[in-house]
Length: 277
Image (cartoon, rainbow, N blue to C red; front, side, top):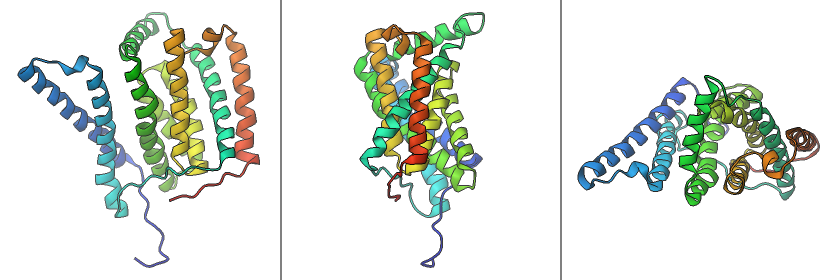
């Protein structure tokens, strides 16, 4: 390759989507097969253990990432996937965390407007609530899944692969951020998490696009999930308004103020320093 020729970049399209989904299905199927073997040989069903939940989750994402790397990225670029996790200047962190917190407040208010009763939403919400209760029985498992594994794996897939792959394909960055955020919301599988995931995904996508480092969206994602975990542990709810006994309108107002001010500073008034690998 000539010295001045442009570096090849991977793109995300339907083939990439198929690779991600296929890799996740194959990997989780293998874990399920091991559980079947455990049932027949050792008479132990691992499905009801916290260990199985962690392993199955990790296997699914690792399978998706490996499949995209092996079948899409390597043939297109001639090299392995390599994500940039370099830190940025300290001032950037002082802007992105308040901006993220503001969007968390806004997302809480909007999510609170989605019905939790009625012939459709009522039964769906009851099912969703039972599912979440099963996942939050053990605090250590929830922290590992929500605060460590989810931020790393999900940011690699939705920002590092999907968003970046769409931009590499030539899509407008704003559209790529929105599309990857919608995918991010859809995988949560319920309307209450969908809204928050899309809104917060847009902030994560913006920060990744501006800094070119996955470290920052990973930290922001972990911050959001840690706040939710703490609220659940000590308030039995994910609502700031309920835990602090304040009006949801106050939460919305604070959220709009925080997000507006720090979004403006982050995008208009502050120079973000980074080095893209």
